[in-house]
Image (cartoon, rainbow, N blue to C red; front, side, top):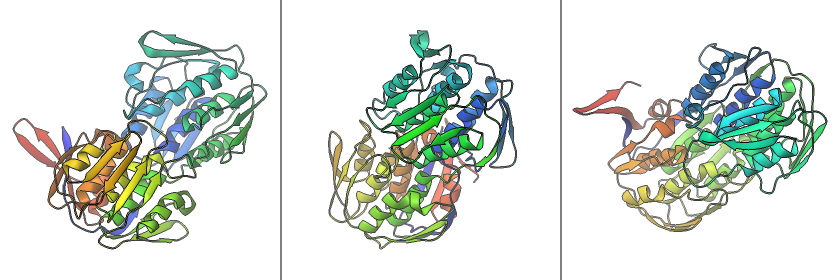
Length: 429
């Protein structure tokens, strides 16, 4: 069992390079199924979710080759339409994109229900309704397998009852090769939705309006391979920006799209940090103690739910009373009890958390309940006086490439340790 050990109280200083977007690349990898050709994707992060998706594609017949540290070549010409079992899907949520991609290519799909982080009920009813509107008959089989079947997927007008990134992406995948025109109303506008549309268009698809709440897909008969680079990871960038501010540091975050970061940058400025934007980088500098603020998570371009836990850590030691409102998911405040273990004063009522800022956090043994909660625990450990040990770090590895090494490069006293029955051993790097 591995854990991250942090000796806190050191302001982060220096430069950090951001990798490709986890939330985008998983959709892009699924989309290669539609091509029956070779796609070369650059700027792919080396994270466990990507490794699992590549393994699934290989198991289903794709020729998968790594070309260097951040480039993958995938040929899906001889891809088969077999079942994707629970053993392969249980580890991460984005496995449901295989439903849309397989249905879009073969007109049928059988995929086990997805797994991933557990922070409340995240129904896929909008996905299912979208598939049905495209002509799919949907069945739920043994071992939580979802089966889709259609003689010929047909375009349709689909209105999403709630803004859903996953459903928007899945419907785009399913409709790219469907007959006729599909219109998605009340579509998600996140940067990774736009990235998927751009990737598909590079493959010969006709997807228009991505980034707005109405997306129109003109189905095409065939798609071809392409070469494409994934957008930078908005959430990884936001995590390092928040860590810099929370520790009173000064960090240049490189390889970002500043426009994607506006909701995060604005809240850091509201808390008292200095945020300077350049062409493809952002400088964050902050005083020793930040100020309170109010945050409500919302669909893009609002404040992202995947940044809420990181700001929860930051605000736990900000001066004054801060309020966090979670507008997307249920039960995403589970990590708050871990901050309380570190001396935070927090009251949670449903989807609202009230944080009375304390002068400082104290090091403790804490647990990562999910991916972004794990990032919050790391930030809390960097802020705290004393030593913090973060357990269940396999969640963190799902979405952050070399987070320990990157933080070490910013001056943090942080390391990975492997725990054995008879003691511990530090892991190099």
